[in-house]
Length: 177
Image (cartoon, rainbow, N blue to C red; front, side, top):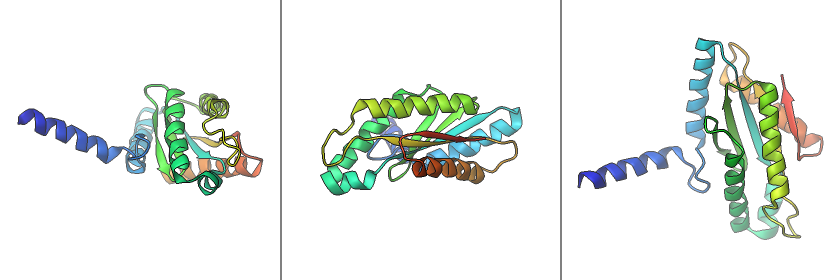
């Protein structure tokens, strides 16, 4: 009985921090991790960066080929993105078709390299090759932590970079200093 309870406790703990569809970390866990990483960077004077990743034209995928296909794209994307990250990086679903990667001990150049690796991997993977939906691509906004910066400000800068990439044509990585 004790083994069963321990397995159940472990499973419930995983559910509490994982996105049900993709298995990636959920937003709540990401935000808690981001706050911890910020505190660590403040305390140890280290750097870290974030990549805010959005699947381009995701609504049109759902509209043209259905929500099941959209769910499949989300799941496949999470797998491809996770495989492009280091073991110490934290990756999860930020909301809808947006994902967040937290990259400890990584400056802006390293984060750009990581984001480009994810972008290129998704573009070449052909996650959904349906004529109605077109090729699946992602746009990534990158920002590096500035000493004393609140996590909301860091995310806002990454979001601004993401929208700059969307406005410039999508399927690209844009970084802010």
